[in-house]
Image (spheres, rainbow, N blue to C red):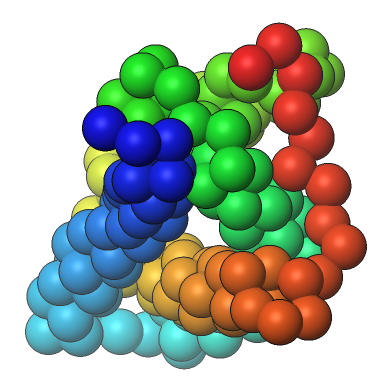
Amino acid sequence: MSREVAGVIAAVWGAAGLMALLGFAVARLTAVVLDGLDADWQWMHVATAAANAVFMAWSEGYRGFQLRLSPRGAARVKWLLENPSALRIALAPLFVLSYFGAPRRRIVATYALTLGIVVAIVLVHALPQPWRAALDIGVVIGLAWGMASFGWSLLAVLGPRQAPVSPEIGNA
């Protein structure tokens, strides 16, 4: 296999894998939110859902994805395109998310964030409806924003402008 073909495979797998992960989460959580709409909502559920939707759009969608993960992930996809290897091809979505091949501080931050997300999932999953839906609606908004911003970042990095974003490559 030529280096160019390997690079395309790695880049496509990395980008598609991340989008599929986000899309799967959006689909599953949207079902939870829709299920929660059948519950008996009180004013505090509505207020929690509204506040959480705004907070998650800002913190997860804008700050987490649009300003950080999406531009860096897109830059890492471009880097994969130009620097494929067997390991990076096989684990391209994990590479794009900075689970490896990044500076130590980025890898530690990625694993710590993942642990925090897992803990939050477990805790929210234990809540009854409509509380679960009130919280998950914000996550759906943040993740959908993340998908859109990652797509936009890919266009910027792979397009003619080639936005100057660091892929933060460490021991790749």
